Amino acid sequence: MSNTSTASKQPYSDEFIALKIEGAPRLASLRSIGAALNELVYAENSFTSQIAEVIRRDPSLTSRLLRLVNSVFFGLSQRVNNIEEAIFYLGLRQIRELALATPIIEDFERLHGSALKNAPWQKLWRHSIGCGILSREILSLSGLTFEDDTDYIIGLIHNVGKIVAASIFPTAFGKILAANLATEAEVLACETELIGWDHARIGAFYLERHHLGPEIVQPVRWYNDPPSAGDFEKSAAAVQLADFLVRIAGVESFDISGTVVEEDIYALPSWNILFGKKNEIEAEAVKESIRTSINRLPGVLKGML
Image (cartoon, rainbow, N blue to C red; front, side):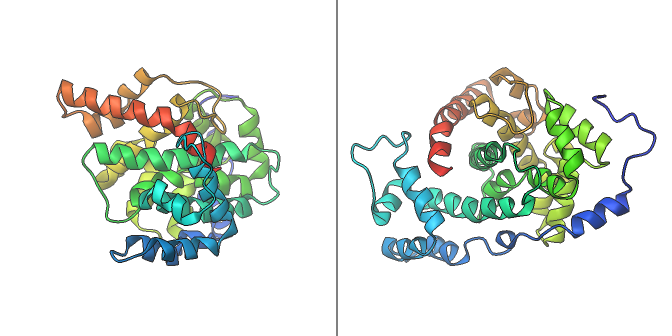
């Protein structure tokens, strides 16, 4: 199979692809992500007991919370089985990330349904959460902070287009997975050749139909080409870097067989967009912080999934 789209005409028209995406199941979590819990963790006068009570109502979230706090990353001497104690150890930011990931992953599973049932979806969930965590950390290192969880969400859902594609074009998507492609560029080209749109374009269109704002849609659309993201190029750049760093951390990729090393990220336009103006000492400090993040990432993901 060619690594570039050589066909004179794409397999499906833009109108047909758009119609198929509009007919895909909606994800409730994208509009009401942990609403009650979000209110509590952002409130200045929230009590741990109140947050714990909300978490107890969600068995899946409770299970992930306790598994995360007891993961090898935290190295606690005694097992934690108390939700309030778990909240104390993890902190509110980690609780928010967990609360965001849980309903979205469950919705993603319903979205692809029985299509490609044997696909390695667990790898995609792990990769997606890792990108959410690292996107937030990368943006913070660049000096860009958010009042909400946009910095986490853009990484978490940047691959939603792959799930939508599996749902609406299962045969083509199965061929993409079977192609054993080595790089993201090869995946994008193969998607365009077999479907007509790559997963970034599919995902962005799908998210627009959920009425998400450009601060999320544009980074998802352009994370493979951050300079094209306009006002949102830093967010897109953070997702691209996170996407590479998750693989450097040893987290298996969903559909890419090739490997990357740390030096690869410094050649990306994303690195220059985010950190190109830093002096040598500042840049080295950023690199060291990133190394720390990728070293602890597998332990965090082990607890969250």
